[in-house]
Image (tube, rainbow, N blue to C red; front, top):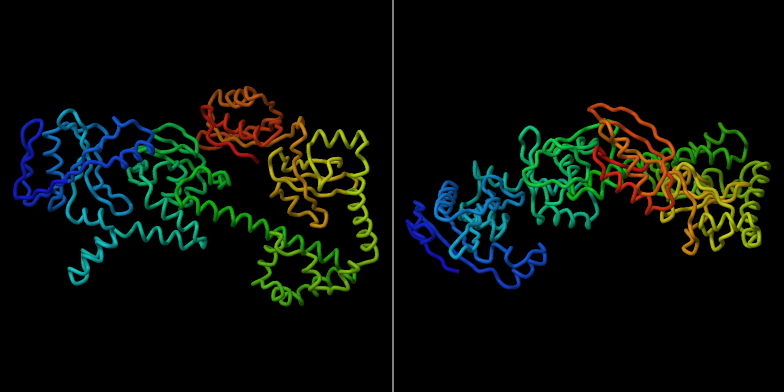
Amino acid sequence: GVGRSGSTEKINGGNGSMDTNTTTLLVTGRTKGLWSIYTKMKRQEIEFDDVHDVVGFRIIVDDVASCYQALGAVHSNWKPVPGKIKDYVALPKPNGYRSLHTTIIGPHKRRIEVQIRTRDMHDVAESGIAAHFLYKEKNNGGIGGNKASDESTRFAWLRELVNEVRRQSDPIEFVNAVKEDLFLKEVLVFSPGGDLYALPRGSSVLDFAFKVHSDLGYHCAGAKVNGKMVSLKHQIKNGDMIEILESIHQTPKREWLQYVRTSKAKNRIRAWLKRRQREHSIVVGKEMINRGLKEYNPRGDDAAARKEYSRKLDHVLTTFKLKDEKHLFTALGYGQISIKNVMTEVFGAAAIATRGHSHSINKKEKDDQFIIQSLENSSQSSNNPQFTALSNLNGIIVGQERNIMLKFCKNCSPLEGEKIQGVISKGKGVKIHRLGCKYLLEADEKRIVDVRWDDEAINTSLRPVQLQVLCEDTPGVLANMSRAITTSGFNIGNVHLRKLSNGRGLARLEVMLKSLEDLENVIKRLRQEDGILEVTRR
């Protein structure tokens, strides 16, 4: 590159010369390397003619005012390329980078990139904000007063990142957070009030909602971008004006993790889902304790059993290394400990061996015989047309057997391709549940069996799947939904509509589907229709 400095600089160009009127000026030039050009072409999937920074110049001046004077001088001599002027001085990047960027039409009609910055800005760009901070502190004998305030502002982005990371304990998530928030290119967008927000390129309106406020993100039901309704996964662009639509009935869904890009949004959604799952596990664990006290009670006196449980609670918590009863409920709900082991600590191993009353013993023996007999019979009934037809129709393997009488849970309605487990039901064979189904969580663990989809079977059975669609309350939107589903080759069972506030509606649809792939296709097709804001599975 070529460097020059002086009290006045004159650069010969297309329209004559320019006088920057700056006290000190440094101009350096460079030609982009072949490897750098090649990687940019691959990364952005562009041709060589679309690489506009093969030749670039950097102008370093004394102060901020001189940056804009130099920019004006450059534009007065060479035509700027529309859309290629970026002001990172007035709107710095979150990592502290500041500079004026412009692309001009230079000699021989070649595009040339020009960067204009002060010496301080250059130091930050080249060495990083931390190195610049230490250099300033060393040369100025410490930082205080307004200078300290300036440096504090520059580190605001880092403090925000650190505070966010402190809320999580996973080191992998920490690394991802740094990579996402520090190195990704940005888009600058506006709120309806004119506030400016910087987010990583590829962010959605949901990312924007969490950027503004966590509560806004939790209850984000839709958005308007530049006055037009969009879905939650709509990716924002530079200059967009975004208005978030709230609903107290809206809460985060697991699929939201696929829509967001920023670490803040991902962390907030994960934390909310974990909190809700924990709350549900506490309810399930408490119910398991109540059932356990009745089932394993050796005296038949519920009051006496509960009294014994209260007396032994501290012993139970110590045994399983738990903090309090709520953590006990949580561990039971998550399946980390079994109710049998808890009841053993309460009533003793002898009482558990007999499992309470004599009538309970008989019931237990009958239950065990039924479970064993169900699985044994499955291997002896291969010639039974009823069992074979059901097995072939549903395409489920129980253990290693295909010929088992099956029934699907109506609450979760599992589809081919989803992770499943079975629960043996007396007289009804095995009931198939989707993982996470509340009835599976509440089932007796002794009755849970491993099941899987049979890859060799041809699945022809349709099951009802409940979909919830948030939409605009406008004429024709229901017709759009119906068309989207029927043109995909599926039938609608039931439809329930409810009018919400802010000109929106909520539709609950029952669609007959065979597989997880069918479900994904229907949801994708619905989201493409006008007036559809969000589609989720109930």
